[in-house]
Amino acid sequence: MTECYLVQNSSKDRIKFLHLKVEKDTMHSTWGLLGGKTQNTSNTYGSINTGKANELSPVDAAIADFDRKKARKVKNGYREVPDLNNITQVKEDVIDFDNPPTSFCPSKPISKAPKKLPKNYEFQIKENGMCHYAFIGTTGDIKLYTRRMDDHTAKYPGIVGALSAYRIPPKSILGIELVVSPGHGNHQENFHHIQKINKTDCLKGKLKTQDQIMAINYQKDHRVRGCVFYAFYIAGEEILDVSKSLAYIKTLFPVRSDKSAMYQPWVVKADSMKEAKTYIRSKKGDIEGLVLWDLDDQIDIGFSGKPKRRAAYKVKLVLDTDVVATGWEEGKGKRQGMIGSLKIGQYDNTGSFIELGTVGGLTDEQADPSGWNFPCVVEIKYDAQNSNGHFIFPRFSKIHEDKLPEDCKC
Image (tube, rainbow, N blue to C red):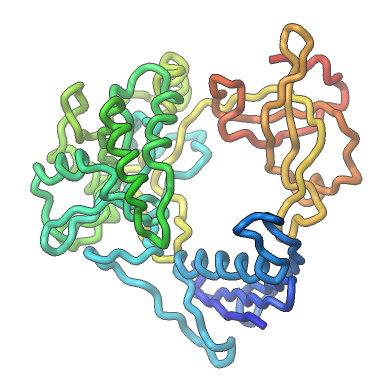
């Protein structure tokens, strides 16, 4: 039998736990708060890659998933303990500028923009890129980490070299959005390029040599630049005040130009949310959206692996459309046997049906497959569409019982 106990402090100073146990081909998971409510689920595995060199028996598949879940939780700040007896506190990670803890996680912007603007605020253009953290170590060495804290320094020698020119003090951490130059035109195409370069391909946190070579070669035709959006630490000092951090960036980095490899975000003047959304519409296709900063607020820097959302808001146009739900894919964990996502599509002008991937976001009640009759029409909300018609960040909105599938056209 394979078994482990993992614990972590919750945001309300209680202790969360996860108990994983494998018995033959079944993994049992129990989680919750010590002394509080708990939940549990069981998953029985079948053979994987049957007949291939990497074939796994049901027992091996269960153990492999156990190892993956345990590693992911430890990376997110959980601690392994012998059992759950007599646990009163959990020692958390602390900042290390030379060997950052994998649980490092500053807060992210709030997904939904407020109806009313903060008293003191600033709108910045949100470029469609990949968030990275630049750690300047105690001796001035610069390393780049993804939001998941994989070391991608070797992929971006140009960014590291450009940052070194600014002589940022040791023991500093910057938040940088890596984007592909020129950064104008279709922002989805630019994001595709940076996504290809940044593809997460680390083995136990270490970058594979062949992927480093591929990333550098790809940048010969697709230049990567960095928009520095926050200074989390400067010379060992934790910077939580938004106004202080943004002011520091503006004194150090230039306004964006065709020559600047590193730059501060573009600021947009808008006196209301309506003006902000009007601006986004006018730049549709060129930018992803805006970030609204509350200049009187503070960010949060935690070591739980799961970032809180505060101090900033994403402002994007939310689009909606009707699609045909043709079937469903099973969910995982507590959603086993239930709908995890819907298979969707639309008809083109010739009457041919085009499959457009899947959409999730159903409640537990909506995920009961017995309540569905396929095909049916559903409304989804999304941010944009790829050139192949697939939706960016789609989420289920509601069922349209009054509409016919053939009415859903691309």
